[in-house]
Amino acid sequence: MTTVPESSKSHAQTPATSELLRETIRRGAVFILLAGLVVLFSIAQPAFININNLMSILQAVAVVAIIGAGVTVTLAIGGFDLSVGAVAASSVMAASYAMIVLGFNALETVILVLAFGALVGAINAFLIVRLKVPDLLATLAVMFLLTGLQLIPTAGRSISVGLILPDGTTAAGKVDPNFLLIGRSSLFGLIPVPVILMISVALALFVLTERTRIGRLLYATGGNEVAARLAGTNTARIKTYAYVLSGTLAALGGIIVAARVGRGDVSSGASLLMDSVAASLIGFAVLGLRRPNVLGTVIGAVFVGVLLNGLTMLNAPYYTQDFVKGAVLVGALALTYGVSRTRA
Image (cartoon, rainbow, N blue to C red; front, side, top):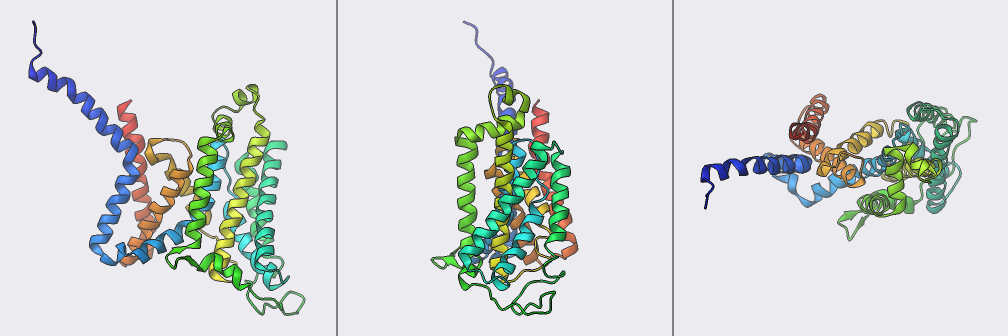
């Protein structure tokens, strides 16, 4: 009977071990970096790991995660929504205008703003699906349209109690205290309402995209629209759903911002587009899925939030934060895609 030398066994096992290590790094790159950041910041600044600070991080990233989830849905169909930042900013102004100028209560304001977001999504879908305008051009045009439109009713001024309207009259309304609870209250005095909304949206979209027929059709449309159409999928309807959902979630993000600041700030939402897109793209690297997914988007938003919060607590100069954020994000994506390419 012939026996295999021990040296031969070790050589045979080495490729398998190496492959397992590559796969582990590829699937867990973002989690490894996130855990490393938490440990590093906790050692450098013990207050970082305080539960209140961790909740503050989640509250800060809730809006980005919610808006990013909408972007993720449009990415799943092979599209891209550049208007989400403008929708969120316009929603902040619309919510404040509805209460302070029109005298709406909290419920009426929320319904109005969500309907506004859905309408913008429907307009995007009409341009893209019916008029065949490329998604980047259509949503970019809508972004510019909304950026200018939100300034017209107040002649470019922010909206707050006592606003002087363009006709010289003074707005008599005020922000409904119940509306402010959306952005400022907490469940059991611990979990902020925006965090609860973020988790609810993430769970609902995870089930929709990963566990339902509609989710499969979303990815099928994005993977090969012609094949999906030939298989009987109404791709026009699926794409419309995606953009309407994206607009609605962007409006929800705007509602949270408005409820947090208590006024309509013309500068609100300036960074929401880039941050939400960054979170969506980082999501490609989570678990090595290499496709848009809602879980990855939320993890991506938390990743960026942890990084910025830690840098702030360490008193890092503000002008270095974007560079450090970019460097760490490049590292996460390189670990995911680079390791995968090496394996291939």
